[in-house]
Structure formats: structure tokens, C-alpha cells
Image 1: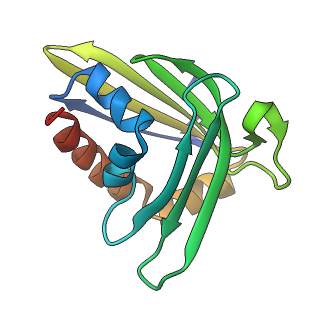
Image 2: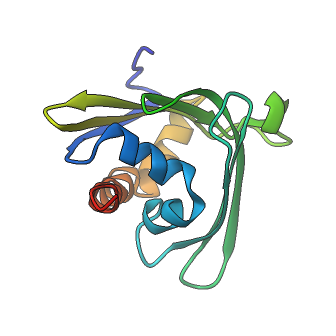
Length: 155
């Protein structure tokens, strides 16, 4: 995928965990809940069906108790290598009732006994990209990368 600096965000990190362990952390709900959001936010529910057309769903609980439901679809799932997901479609590629906020392309590339983890996040326009940056994209995703690596290394 081509990076468009006007609408896209990207972050990457070399992790010491293997692609297989990282994949498990995406696939297994109890593991996913431990890393997907930075504290004090927490994931209270998850349903990730890691296959093309599978559901990409989670509920995040904010510190004030507000619940944020995120429902989407995995567009592509190459085990231990790549996940592409969006909130523009629901399970089975059904159109979502609201316009898409983002599509993310996550790649797991084996590297030196670990994994180069890259997330390329695409937005439909510059305003959505700026909104995502203001939500703390780099700090938030950077924090979760650390949580993911730490958890995955224990598997």
C-alpha cells in the first residue's frame, strides 16, 4: 500500500516477540484485552474472527465509564503475516451504517529473532487523519505496541 502523508498515519516498532506470538495476541480475546488500549482505558469485550470477512469488534471502557463500541471487518488475514481491517464494513463485508473512520494494514515481518510490526492507518480525508492524531495516535499506539511486545514475549 502506498503511504499518503495527507491522509495516512504510520507507526512501526521492532518487537522481540515472534510473529506467531503476536498473532495469538490478536486472535485470543483474553490476550487481546491485555494490550489493545493504553491504561486506564480497558477492553471489556472482543470478537476478532481473523479471516477475510470476519468480524473485528471490541468495546473500550473509558476512565469515566463511557463504553465505546468498535465494529468492523477484517478485509485480509494472512496468519502471522498481515491483517487489514476497517470500520467501513461489518462482518461479511456488509457496509457499515456510518462512514468509515479508518482502514488499518498491520504487517508482521520476521526480523532478527523478533518482528518488525508496522501499522499503516488510512483515512478518507485529511480531517480524519488530524482527528486521529489529536486522539493521541502516536502515543496511544506506541504504548500498546510496548504492551503487546511484553505480553507476546511471555507466550
